[in-house]
Image 1 (cartoon, one colour):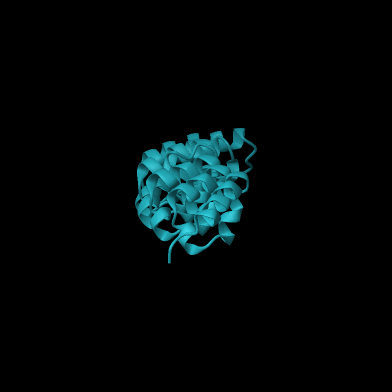
Image 2 (image 1 turned 90 degrees about the horizontal axis):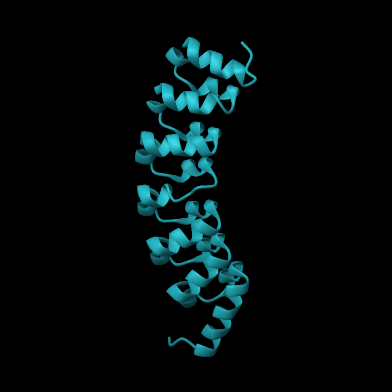
Length: 170
């Protein structure tokens, strides 16, 4: 089926203003890279309605998460496993939950996420919950996260003191 260019032009103009309108265009237009880029630049969450091929397009996904960090959850599994994509998020470390298991176990990625939002620790691998630097980064912002630390670090004097300085109680 050929694209009706009048329909395409209308859709492009519409999604530039309201990216969420991508939901209502035809599947053919949801697979049109120019239309999807316009939509995600207006509203990153529009990635949800893009074709699977475009949810796997790095440029489209990076544009979406630059607009709305939470759009990461609509990216392909392959892109959620790419360090470049996950570390492009600068505003919400809790989005670590949408990263691959490998990146949830990547010390650099987790430290960056915890420094953005201490609660990202909830999505860190078990091995990184036993990493003193990671735990110190988290409990220095929220003492309650001490509960997620390994048994050894919950008994570590320095870790406990940092948590107590930040409102924690024994």
